[in-house]
Image (cartoon, rainbow, N blue to C red; front, side, top):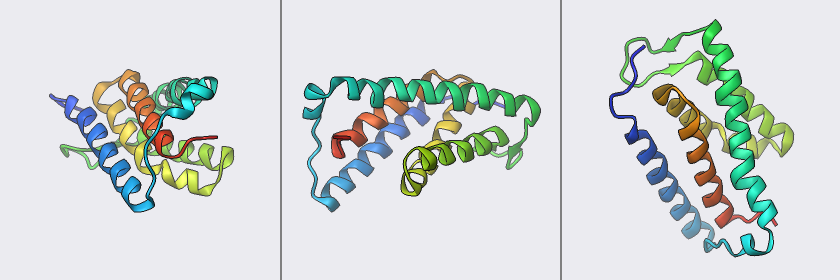
Length: 149
């Protein structure tokens, strides 16, 4: 398996895609982004936008990903420029199930594509640091539109 020569494009894509999605949601649902809730609920901000993304990435794209990748180091499609590993598929499945159990089926559906993308970051960077950073930024953006209070 070859690693991407310029994986920074994936991080840029993560932020540009998120900005586009948040803009469309803001316009379509007529919601204004705001982080004012952070001032009154900073412990909740810390949990949802810092601690949870770090812990989730450590468990899913760290421990579980490594265990699956060690046992089944397969990719699809083989030899393609952009491929998905069996570890990405399995960790995404488990990530979606965990969100469905912890919250609801809609939350599980909403994390499907982001989880695959985080798995691609994990594959290209061969580490979880970028996954933690992007996941945190995505949560900050999401909760700026839909505060958890």
